[in-house]
Length: 63
Image (cartoon, rainbow, N blue to C red; front, side, top):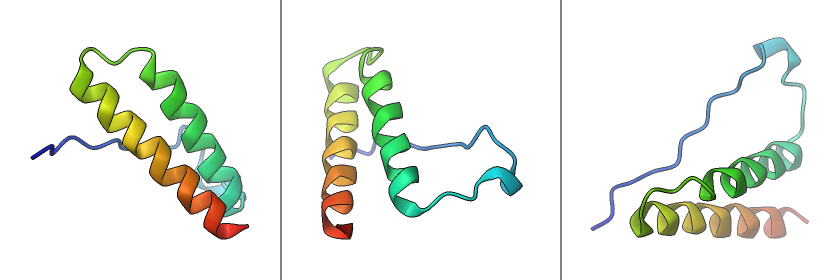
């Protein structure tokens, strides 16, 4: 069973996070796509690809 996860940390102050959920999901997808370039093994790559897929599904359901 794969127990790896992708986690996010906002680099901006709380007060500057006045974005809607779609903007945040778009940013998470962009971050995952950048992170995918640095995956050190196949397992990490699969975990990141799964996260991207789940984020895109969530985005599709919002529209």
